[in-house]
Length: 77
Image (cartoon, rainbow, N blue to C red):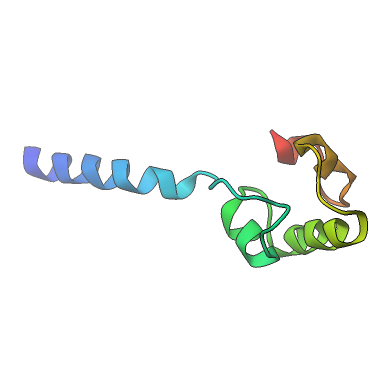
């Protein structure tokens, strides 16, 4: 029983980082990478980020992402 609990705890410890957001540079990443890396951002929002970046240039701050349709303060939190 102890061995099973230890194995379960180890498996959870390894998998937790995979559930968190992964750092990504939204000024260089493609939409698929952005969607895979950021919690709460799917392919649709990631495509909007890339389209905004192409139209307006690189983002100067994280707060500037709220200018993208579908990205609000809650997404940045």
